[in-house]
Image (cartoon, rainbow, N blue to C red; front, side):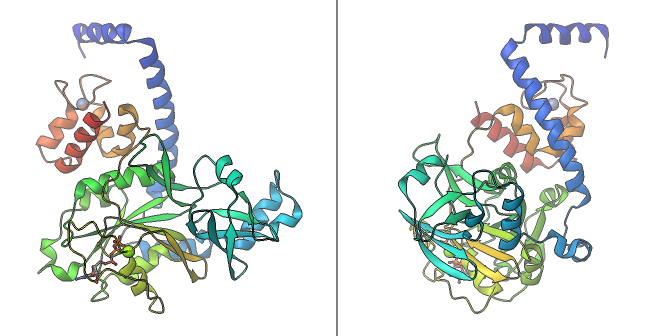
Length: 377
Ligand SMILES: Nc1nc2c(ncn2[C@@H]2O[C@H](COP(=O)(O)OP(=O)(O)OP(=O)(O)O)[C@@H](O)[C@H]2O)c(=O)[nH]1
Ligand SMILES: [Mg+2]
Ligand SMILES: [Zn+2]
């Protein structure tokens, strides 16, 4: 960096509004905190090649807590809860207006949701929530959530709509044909999943519809980010075991566009289930087969949540600064950009753009970044 450039940078720093500086500092702090976690995640990165080994290594210790563990947790930090409450803890398996079904101690209960409980919660009750139910089958409390999967309400953008709570894994199901793959949706889902704290997995369904594996789209950029990409077919059974390995002993939500085969996959993983799937699906008819999220207990701590298809997936509460956190593959190049605050969109001497031009960074991911950046104005 020569002296004129240094001076130029100083000038920029000096004239940047105070609020922006503060926001940047805060964002930096968060990013650094996230990076700490990321290192660990990188070590434990699950790929198609190492999942078996990782599963062996982590074994049951990585399994999600059973109800007994939830109760043990509660005993340790009871907060407002009393000893009597612990035996009445359960997991929400479906929610309808004013009522929900709760899985408690091997039984399924029909539970009343009082208005004040719903009002006390920041967002409504979700499938996967751990709750306490009283003797009269009334819900009395929703326990703190470990993770959430949420999206903005399509009609009220500032309202968060919960898709599921406490999920360890979210499988984004896509299909290659009917409906066709929409890579842009993958990026939005990935960001929403990571923000909620769950581990993302991409499942490419209906591979029986393509002539050869060469016709598979390039999803390596996602593999490079440490996201497992599992091609599968519920018709031929291919890939189902790899998928099972990802979800075993954990609570998993399947999300994705309507008609990609989420319900079919859950049916295929447990042949005793017969969830309605759409046999008459036509694109553009607006028909959704699954209309509400439902949790299925596969035993052994494995829970799968079927969710209704989603057409659009908006992002809320995301600013341009934090958008970068979801494109960690740009980070190294960004250190070589001419401007420290380079957005990689319109600045000169941008190393990120340079590497995209040279094919060292994935162009589709970069274009997604730019599109999201513009949306976030
Ligand atoms: N060729 C092929 N078709 C599949 C496969 N998996 C599912 N389908 C078909 O795709 C259609 C939609 O499947 P569903 O399981 O209902 O899809 P969904 O994602 O649950 O849809 P929504 O509930 O509307 O969100 C059905 O006709 C299935 O038979 C597959 O691996 N190959
Ligand atoms: Mg369905
Ligand atoms: Zn740049």
